[in-house]
Image (spheres, rainbow, N blue to C red):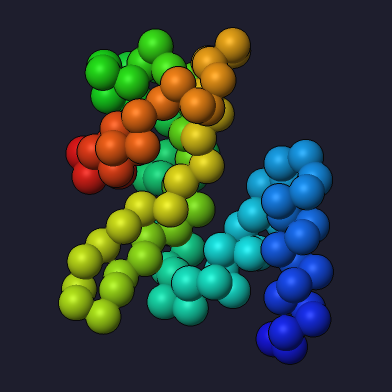
Length: 102
């Protein structure tokens, strides 16, 4: 990918309304070792499939894929839909990391 193409994709992602296919395309280009792997049900997790500690904050989550770094650490790349009226600035960044590790 050329520099100007990457710049345009990044601008489009962060200056527009959320668009899952565009986000997935961006992530696939950013993380070259991304294995496209949605959740086992092929869709989204809602309700009881979301860890209890996060059910008041997260309405729905989908996995775009799994990323393995050079040291063999695995990370799920998620699209998370928050419950209504949950401002992002009220979420503790550490909670996102803990959630990804559960």
